[in-house]
Length: 284
Image 1: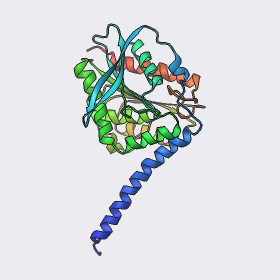
Image 2 (image 1 turned 120 degrees about the vertical axis):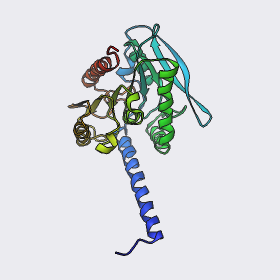
Image 3 (image 1 turned 45 degrees about the vertical axis):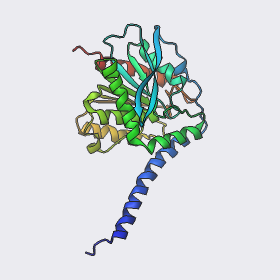
Image 4 (image 1 turned 120 degrees about the horizontal axis):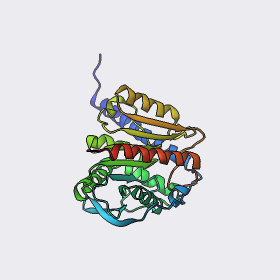
């Protein structure tokens, strides 16, 4: 068999790199289609008032290449010994609607840190969100370090005993990636219709239980992919509870947007609260 020439190897490598980039672009393009008529207005999820009073503050939780990253921290007045949550925004960014969701989590008894993976920017429309999502895609190690420092902030600065992670859409994909990157540092993972990994070898490092929330009408995260993800987790003996809501589309429970499905979103919230309570509030 004739050996490949160096030039041919370079061409093959370039084509492989292009294929990966196109795969990533295809995902973002699917999100653009899913959000084609959408805007980051507050959904009913973000308009629900917290059940109890909580305290909030903007906090610097990370520093990346000399730049301080500010998130939004919400917690009950007496938060000593309470578990923590890393709350990851949708593709719109860390806006007031995501902050409102952090308030809801805090009112349920969690120290909720809403992180900022766009480092100070937010998407005001679909094109702006797509631009920011692509920029995050192009710096995955920096985004991962952002989340790693959020985890350290909760654990080392605030001394929370256990940490869960939750995100929607763009944030749902990063919720999974956070759990894979941090291994047993994450105690519970909730994915709202985020980008999935279906390769069992890539999922091997997952140690936390997973709650997956998806819509049957979602073409960006199709049901076929959800079932492949579920099957891969099952083959590895991972603990997972996957729910696909009939009649629900992508972003049906988002803090921001116009695709809210009340019945599905309210049930998903109840499942999320039960899941976190079971995995983050268990006795020592």
